[in-house]
Length: 99
Image (cartoon, rainbow, N blue to C red):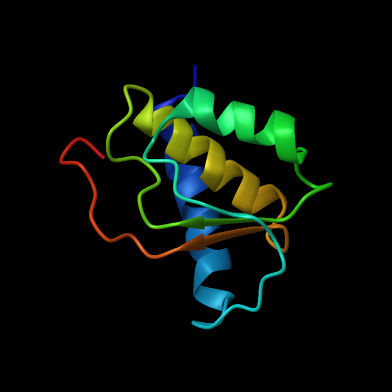
């Protein structure tokens, strides 16, 4: 399990990276909208390759419907921090209240 303090540190580091990124990203990678489905994300990585071997663009709904939405979002955020040039996260159109 990840502690609240670790989540806070992850958010702060991700914030630094995201602030540095431009608003327009040129991305040559698969694009996915996973709606917080953790096991779909794992299947996507199995099929397409894991980071850093494959670049990914995740659009909008990172964690809005799945039972594991927080886990899914934290994994994407951790991958963004670890491989900032390989993972692109685009726009939070909306988030669940619990996120």
